[in-house]
Image (cartoon, rainbow, N blue to C red; front, side, top):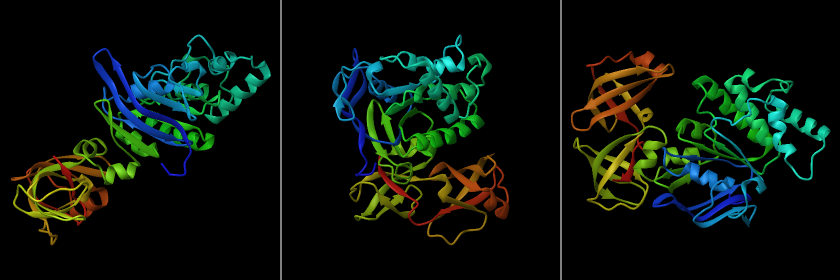
Length: 366
């Protein structure tokens, strides 16, 4: 988040327990006005609990939740300038699309007149590209259209904060990708702060300005998608945000900007440290599959390792290979389509070589 960006919501030392279970622990996070932020992590990591505390559905056991600079711990959900889109949309099946969207407006006090409601509902429908669908019944709408109705219902009250709890989990892959673009466009168009909860790393990477990675109820790293992908601070983040290969190694030389480590295969390689590391320390080396080059001929690179191809998966734009080095074990290599057309397809059992360029390795604590 830019240092000049205005804060719209904040968690200060927030902890939430359910009996003896700690669902969220000492959460500290500022969310910027107009930002698209995602909570990312596996089931049970605390991301939905954090979202529900922002919404007002849960009260923190300790700490403070702030909206627009005011503590709202004791403010009920329906009094907060926040709306939420649920995983299963929570639409009323017996109501029309129009009445589903108008429901929140009709609960406002003082009452909103019918003409204003009609105007706002139609504007919301146009925003989500469902103009003219007001008379339809919910059961007549496709899954993607139902999600848009849920979004229209959420934005019609013009909330300061829109919370999205895995809203695309029920959609197929193609429709999910389409809706990712829809959500990005909608967020830019409205200027509303979006906070998304997801366990899908691709979803978070593709849509977010910043991602808050959680584990065991705690925040482990917050940053832009590129920062988290290129500069993870731990093996957990490197493995959860994208795909990475990990090798055990021992530090032989340590400097502020570069560390030399010895792999189990005996080769010494250079990498970028993400924290101070001393010589002699056991570390974890991380390298992304797309940063590894696979060839039949011995490359001239500083590091070239012989491998045996174990398997391959064709994924259209690239092919994923599982390669095995006798000392390092199995690891993944992503070969772009054009590179594979030039080199030819590798078959299971075939001998080959892998190499990588300078700066491809990250050195992480074990």
